[in-house]
Length: 198
Ligand SMILES: Cc1cc2nc3c(=O)[nH]c(=O)nc-3n(C[C@H](O)[C@H](O)[C@H](O)COP(=O)(O)O)c2cc1C
Image 1: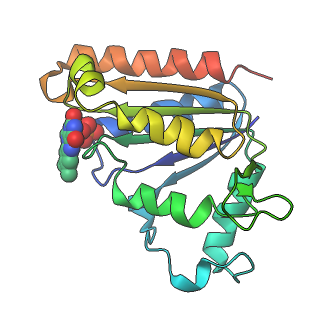
Image 2 (image 1 turned 90 degrees about the vertical axis):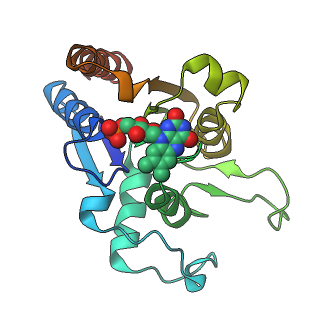
C-alpha cells in the first residue's frame, strides 16, 4: 500500500516525533511505500492564499505535489498533539491547502457548495495519533473530544475515507519512560493491524 504520513509538531525529540518515527519504521517493515512529511521541519506554509481558494486555481508546485500525494494514498496517518482541542495551526493549514475541492471532495450536479459534497479520496482508511495532557473522561465529558469530531466526521468521512481509527495518548506530562515505550509499542501494533502487509 501507498501510505501518506503527516506530522504536525515543532519539536524534534517530542513524543509526537517518536510516534511518527515508529509509524514510518513499522510501515516500511510491513513493505508499504511511505510518503512522510514533517510539516514544521519542512517549513510548510499554512496560510491559504486567496488565489488558491477557487476551484481552478493554479497551484504552486509544492502544493500540487502534496495534493498528488494525498490523491495517490491508499491510507493516511495523521500525528499531532492536542492544542486547544485543535490540531496545531501548521496542520490545520495543510488541511486547508491540500484537502481541497476536486482533490479530496467535490460538489455534485447543480450544487453550488451548499449541499453534501462527495468524497474523492482513494484512501479507504485513516489513522490519527494524538497526545494530550487531559484525562480521557474529562476530554470527553467536559470538552466533547473535538479532535474526534474534526478528523472523523468533518474531514475523513466528508472526503470519502470510510474506515477511521484514532488513539489519544494521555497524560503525557505525567508519563514515565516506561509508559512512553509502551505507547510506542502500541503504535507499532496499531499500525500493523490497520495496514497489514499486502
Ligand atoms: C499551545 C498548546 C496548547 C495546548 N492545549 C492543550 C489542550 O487543549 N488540551 C490538552 O490536553 N493539552 C494541551 N496542550 C498540551 C499538549 O497536548 C502536550 O504538551 C503534548 O500532547 C505532549 O506531547 P509532546 O511531548 O509530543 O509535545 C497544549 C500545549 C500547547 C503547547
